[in-house]
Image (cartoon, rainbow, N blue to C red; front, top):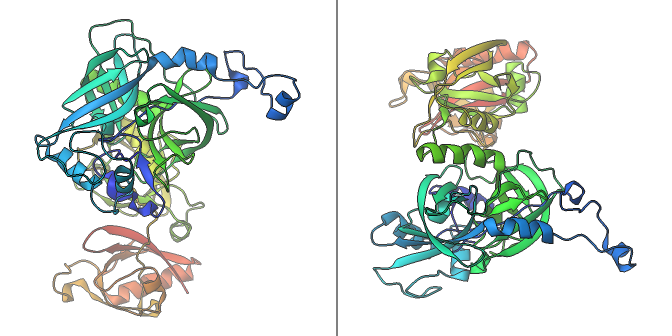
Length: 511
């Protein structure tokens, strides 16, 4: 189960310690999972659910999943990859990370179950030159051999081999990968009659049956069942997190496998589990079919995924920020900083603006904005509803293309710095009077450790750029804007604060 979704997930998931969040397949082992919807909606005749008590009385036999499994199981494959450690520096670094200390939530699992590959298992010395072998799962989506798996299953693979339920093996090629969603498309050539399954067109309901079929621990063709536990889960993997949570047992080797509903359609692709022990505890995460369909279509068409790009750094709108801006409810994404030359900057979007809707659909928070924009193609014309300096307006712009290593980063509700006047426990000085602080704003020169600003995380050296939407250049400007905010009946005021790492907005309560 010790896998990674993409190259930058290991660090992001440390926040889940001491419990463990592990991917289901990488350079270790991976597998398949399947979800099943309510028996009442099944096309296999499971029209009523009979409880165990009734069955014991002989009233009826509890329904099973046999008809469903016999239909979908042939389309599920085991995926085996080989990675040349010496020829791939990334693979070597990945292996070293898995064999090191317990800083990563994936490392302990890897040591517990070991690697499949030459050089031995847990803690055994490895040959300097070797091929690392990994196992995962996948499923055919077309008769001509296209199959879906996780990116972390085939990442850096020198060779990919798939094995069908009947034991037949084929060599596959990687068509394209998308690390941001941990999806990959592979292709087996030479046949046109592979069994395949389809993605569901409907979002699963919480409580619907789910069946998982995969290759846990190399045991291909394993079937488990459970229910959909939750939708829209954010597990700290990236700005596009929108996972389906299931409790069908999935383990190391299930990565990349499908999760089926009771109609035999794929509702999700298994990618990670939440586990204190390294084994299944009934909390697994699937990439939704709606996301997989969009990504797979692009991978098939051009081998990579392009996403729309606004060019803004955003954070969620807290209740305090909403109050300070005069918004009726705490929703939308507040712009910390539009990037120079970005579509947003060219359209006149400024720091402090709140994006509340895209093409008429309300935006819940910054993560919702990132996911929404990412589903749109570069060049698409979008209409944004923006709350700008106390008034609503509509902005129309053409999206750019998200650069490979640059994206609108959504704030995750982290502790926000807070500033104000000396009455809030701060001493301030014009930025121009402090060497290295620049010429804009006022610098925090001292923080009262018992004051409200310190409690909000403000630190010496932070620069306040504006207060209540007005640029400030000295202490008098700050006091004036705070007084104005208080006299207008606001219980908090919005500050734009800059430090060496970022520029952000902070709502400061007014005493």
